Amino acid sequence: MPQRVITRPRQLTLLLYCAFFLALSGLLGGYGFLADPSGASLGFPPEILERLPVPTYTLPGLFLFFVLGLYPLVVIYGLWTRRPWAWGASLALSVILILWIVVEVILMAEFHPLHLIYGLLGIAMLGLTLTQAVKRHLAAP
Image (cartoon, rainbow, N blue to C red; front, side, top):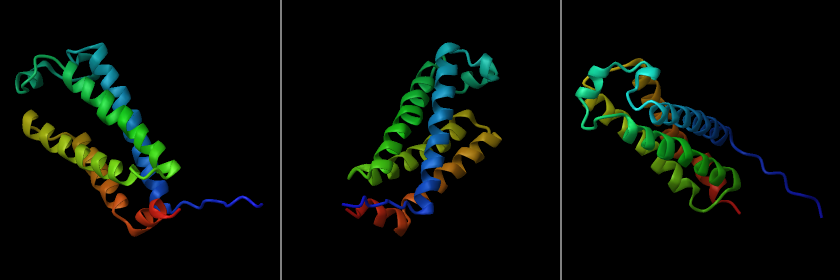
């Protein structure tokens, strides 16, 4: 019996790359904040912490590491293997990233170019997740 070759749509491939980039940066950023909760080693000045509702970057580091680092890897696995929960997980990840950036900008009371990059990444992931090509691919047996 010949094996069926699965062809992934370009939109899904782009979504996988975006999620991988997010996972890598979430893991690295989260680890950086957990290793140095002052944020100094990542170039964050102490006055930013004064504007935040947390005394150190430990909680943001945990969020980055687990939610924006490990969770995207779970989403990648689900999308790659076409799990039934993958579409919803990808949608949730996109919304979480967008909300994280909005809240970060509000709490920090400043805008950094990384906010633009990750905000656009979240919007791109949301748009890619909502494409018919991705929906059809994940719904197909």
